[in-house]
Amino acid sequence: KTHKRPLVTVVRPAAKFWDAEDYHQKFRLQQHPWLCELLSVKDNGQLLKESFVSARLNGYVIGCGGVEQFEKEWATLGLDQKAANYVRRLVTKYEGQGLVC
Image 1 (cartoon, rainbow, N blue to C red):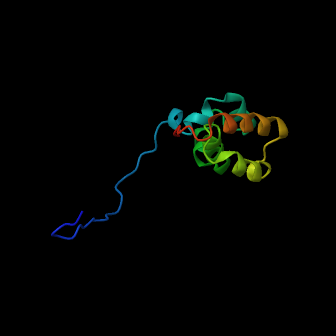
Image 2: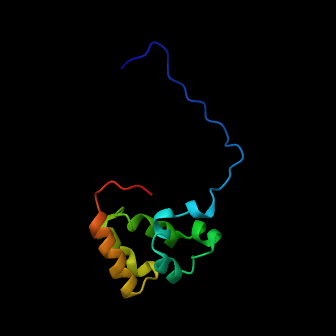
């Protein structure tokens, strides 16, 4: 569609930002408490929020990223074989189902 006037988006600096409460952080990962315990992020909202591994696993447990990517990455995430097998089953089960984090 064409417009007579140019479309202009004004980009402004963000105002003050408030983090969501801890129970919202990495919500999908928190549905797997033993995995959070393994990562030492259970009951540690700051670490849960800031952890790269938590972010990756939050996606993987709902199938985001896919099995192929998980296979390339799981060892670098510091997972043991038991945790990797658990997450692998979840990635396989939910891959492509459109769940969101």
